[in-house]
Image: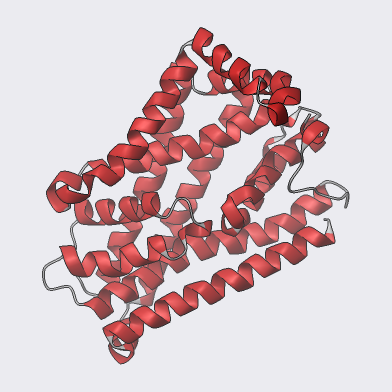
Amino acid sequence: MQPNLIVRFRKWVVVSIAIGALLYLSGSVMADIDRVGDALESFNWWMLFPVCALTLLNYTLRFVKWHYLLHRLNVDMPLREDAWNFASGLAMVISPGKAGEFLKPYVVRERTGTPMATTIPALVTERLTDGIAMLILAGLSVGVYAADKVHYLTIPAVLIGFGLLVLAHEGLSLWCIKMLGKIPKLSGLSEKLREMLVSMRTCVAPVSLAWTLLLSIIAWGAECWGYQLIFQGLNQEVGLDVCIFLYAFATVAGGAMPGGLGVADGVLAGGAATLVAGMTQPMSVAAAILIRICTLWIGVAIGAVALFKVSNMLGGIQLETQPTGDESG
C-alpha cells in the first residue's frame, strides 16, 4: 500500500471525526447536551445488533450489484478479491469528493488488466443507481411529510433522467463525445471517453438498470428500517414511512459531501423533531448519532481493514488513488 494513501486516509478520518464531533456537539448544545446524554443512556444497546445486521445487508447487496456490473462488462474479477476491493471503497466515502472510490477500478485493473476506462462506468452506475433508489424512497412520502421540499428531489431526478435519455440514444451520445473532444484539454481523451460510453451503455441497459436498481432499493431500504429500529431502541414510536423519508432525504441532500458530513447529519438531527409529533430535539440528535455510527462509521472501519488487505492482495505494490492520462488505460 502506498504510504501516501494511508497517510491521506488517516487525515480524512481525523478531519471527518472532528467535523462530525463539532456538528453533534453544537447540535447537542442547542438541544441541551445533558438531555442528549440522557437519551443515549436510555438506549437499548442490544438494538444495535439488528441495526448493524441491516447495514451489513446493505453492503452485501451493493457488492452484489458492483460484481454484477463487472460481469456485464466481461471483467473476470475473482469473487473474494472483489469483495475486499469493494469493502476498501467503503473507507473512501470520506475522501474529498469521494474521489477515493476510484481505487476500486484501479484495483480491478491491477488484478485483471482491464483498462479503467472500461470499469469506471461500473462505479458511476453503482453510485447512480444508489442515487435513483434514494430518490424513489424519498419520493414515496415526500408529498405527505414535506411537500414544500419536493423541488429538492425534482432537480436531481430531472438531471438523472436526462442523462439516461442521452445514453439511451447512441447517436446523441456519440455527438456529446465529439463535442467534448473539441475541448482542448479533453481532445486527447476522446478515445477513452468513447470506450467509457460503450461500457456505460452496457451498464445502464434496461435489464441491467432494472436489476441493479432493485438491489439498491432493497439495500437502502434496509438502512431506513435500521433507522426506525434506532428509534425503537430509544423507546420512540416512529413510523417506517417517516424513517424512509428522513433517511433517504438526508442521504440525497448530503450526497455531495464526504460521507454526507454536515448535511445528512443536520437533516437527521433536526428532521425527526420537526416531523414526528412529540419527538424532542435531544432524542432526534441521539438517534442521528446512533444511526450514523451504525452506517457511516462502521463502513469506514470495515474499509480501513480492507485497505490493508487489498495492499497485501496486490503484493504490496503502490496504489495510485488519482490516476490520470494514460494511467487510466
